[in-house]
Amino acid sequence: MKTVIMFQGNGMPQYTEDFPEPIVKNEDEILISVKAAAFKNLDKSMASGKHYTTEGDIQLAKVIGGDGVGLLANGRRVYALGVSGMMAEKAVVEKSRMIEIPEGLDDITAAALPNAVAGSAMALRFRAAIQPGETVLINGATGFTGKTAVQIAKYYGAGKIIVTGRNEQTLQLLLPLGADEIVSVSQNDESFIAQIKQIHNNTPIDIVIDYLWGHSAELILETLKGKGGFTHRTRFVSIGSITGDKIQLSSEILRSVDLQLSGSGMGSWTKEEMQKLLKEIVPEMFRLAADNKLKLETLNISLMDIDKLWELEVTDGKRLVVTM
Ligand SMILES: NC(=O)c1ccc[n+]([C@@H]2O[C@H](COP(=O)([O-])OP(=O)(O)OC[C@H]3O[C@@H](n4cnc5c(N)ncnc54)[C@H](OP(=O)(O)O)[C@@H]3O)[C@@H](O)[C@H]2O)c1
Image 1 (cartoon, rainbow, N blue to C red):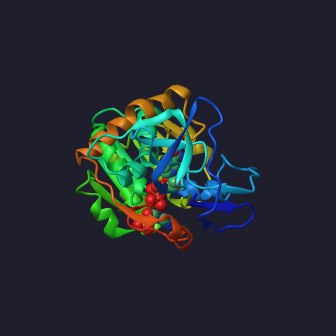
Image 2 (cartoon, helix red, strand yellow):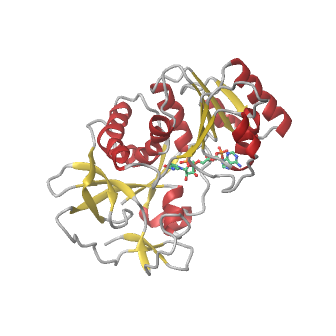
Image 3 (tube, rainbow, N blue to C red):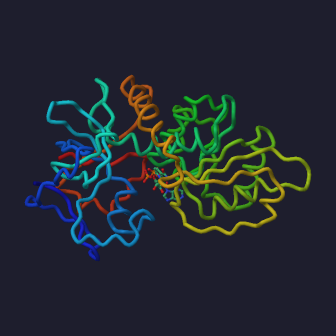
């Protein structure tokens, strides 16, 4: 079959037309004909063994891609998580982790959406337990997941949404999607802190959804630092680390403010939360997208072009989606 594989120790993916079809190993699994698979940071870091879920993985040649959209033998169109890699004509998926795709939602959008939903709704719903009217700051909102997070935070009833990022043009595009205020991470530290402090004084920040980590996360946490009086409770949820995996965190910050610091990702979710994601949250977001109430932008690429696009940085919040 046609697919894209990675060899261990070789950093580049390889298109091939001659790879064996995956085999269903038990009755919990099923074979699908893949139509579209999103190409995300997660796929890249998993394929190259750099993601925490694939550290020490020693498979020699591996089909890449963690999730996607395909057809069952009976013609039903489903989104599924792959047991085998999804950037291939055929993939084995778990029957219990398939989601029906509603009419009106195209394959490409359906393939792109679930990872961004996991990267936003899971944090908002379960780590931050968002309440209607709350103020949400999204640090690094210009990516595909950040754009989705703005819309989902609004849908969950956020009263005010502050977005940060480096790309002024993309930040402006977030205003019609639900953002209320823009903070540039490209300004100097003093003015970044001053702007966030002013916002926090006027409308205390209830939730920080963080895709960047690194220096801007340090500055935001610094901004929240208290002086010994009663403070507003802020739930800070780490989701990505685009600008660095490590930060310096003063213990005084943790002691001086009512801060809940947590992360949202595979391994942090309970079984029940994962079930809710697959059975309720993604289906609900599929319906919103089918009704054009969730705006997403995708770039369609062909399987055989993946090696050319492996290192491409998509800068305007679009998601690359591979079609077979
Ligand atoms: N834990 C989870 O469940 C989960 C789920 C989904 C995603 N994630 C993670 O969340 C992060 C964001 O995901 P995504 O899907 O939005 O990725 P994405 O679509 O690739 O977007 C990342 C964005 O980061 C921006 N960026 C890059 N360098 C920056 C910098 N120095 N300062 C500010 N912004 C910068 C870029 O925007 P501009 O070029 O326009 O500035 C880019 O569009 C990734 O780390 C991803 O792995 C985690």
